[in-house]
Image 1 (cartoon, rainbow, N blue to C red):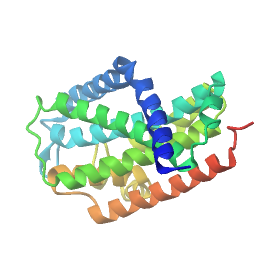
Image 2: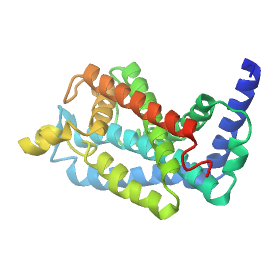
Image 3: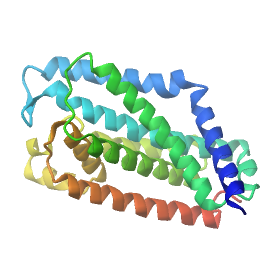
Image 4: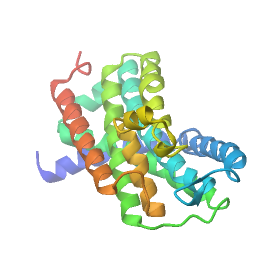
Length: 256
């Protein structure tokens, strides 16, 4: 396969995935932004005058966590729902029949999932600037964590989409793995406010490093060193990407 043919296959699949969520943008982009705004209004209203974290007001502290949470959840939802829907309807055959390399298949799905996650994240960020004057201390760290974390959850969504065979299994995957990992990662609190046992346990949650590193980009302070957080996220991305590519290569639960 020539480079031109490879790019055509990649862009066609990428375009299909982007078009899939963009045609229902009110549901896939606008609705998550509204959900994040509800979190912000409720928690910010109740705790803004009572809690300060890392020297900043609670609403300011909360916003980066909400942005990253929506990036992760929507990146996962995009790739996982696309694959399971294609498997149930049988349309997955039209993706598998063309001679598209596994790497291009992987890249198209992950980048489309990342794009949706980033669009929701930017939407949340733009919607919240009216509530607080949010500072940006290190924009490159913000971009690095958003990109790597969104790609990681896009790849994880592919693993889930390949593994599950019906939507209720996917819902269980989201409710018992994705939701606890994101909600218990420091989105709404600093881990230094936790008892020693739970604080230590939080260090085994990879999403904690995504949230903490992303928040560092805004305030210049974090619970752990941002270099450590970046290394953890990059390592997890490489591991999940390797697993996903191996599953695609074997055609596990895709070709039978």
